[in-house]
Image (cartoon, rainbow, N blue to C red):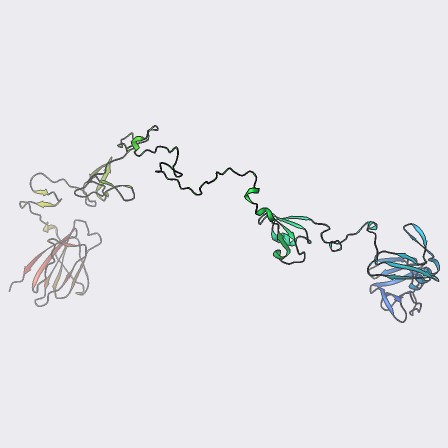
Length: 457
């Protein structure tokens, strides 16, 4: 028996046959007045010969189907009615009449005039478990408690994920290393699903039931407080050691230091800090050198004009550009006191070689302008009644040159005089400029001297 295939211009009417629809490019099954797709949409052509159906696809590939391997439903019914007379069960041939086959669903097969009737039951009425040779039986099919298992997990979360049923035991090693048994396999929380194993009555054993008990004397007191000074009774301490009360009672067998030795060039030790010694120890224990004063030894900061060599301080020789020391002749003309002040004898006069000084230069600038002096020159500012500001060149600080200027104060209004801040008055006092008087000034190495000439009436 086999399916029939038709390749005609019109749809055949034979129910259960196959037909190639040239319009839709599909293989269709004739089911009556309608058709159903069997294979479709990408067929180029189909040929049929000797029960072999060849389907040529649009992409050039082909599919071959042997239709003799298939049958229509009517052919199947006729074949069963005419040819099925006996059925083999467990390799034994039995009549099909009133044959009961118990399998999945419990099947009853009966033969009535060549017609086989099959009816199924939802649940088998009887079953021999020894006939099961394959497949898996779910835990739900087994009686509760028939198989109790032990799960070892690292946390309670892992215990919840384990496939536990009621009666199973879980050992949680990570949290508290305790044992739990499952009481509700469908619970969603650990507290509802598991219960902790307990020791039961073993947690409260009477003292008389404890084996290996220590020997405790009758009437022994509890929590006896020892007393070091007790001489008798329960508080008395036996075999007390003798504790030294003075260090002299101890033996210094390791030669520990009992005092700090005096420091020397070859020995580490202590030093004594005395007044005016030049050094001290601060409140953090650090050794410090004090700063030298007029009455105390200490360290000094070496500035300009001094040299330190092998710990000795030497005063450099003074030059025109460097500070230093000078040799004072021992002829009584110049002397230096204990404070370092230099004094000149009345027998010696400091004079200026006026012959080398240039003639007076008459100031030609604006009376409101600053006046910049010229080395070894005298600038005559004339009669002034307003403020006078005198400036020096940047090199005039210690060039040993003379900067002269003079002016005559107006007869009614005396001018004010302003000098650079580095210039000092010889006697430390700033002169008062009076109207009608003439003043002549000389600045040398930032020291200013002056002379005043009163105008004759």
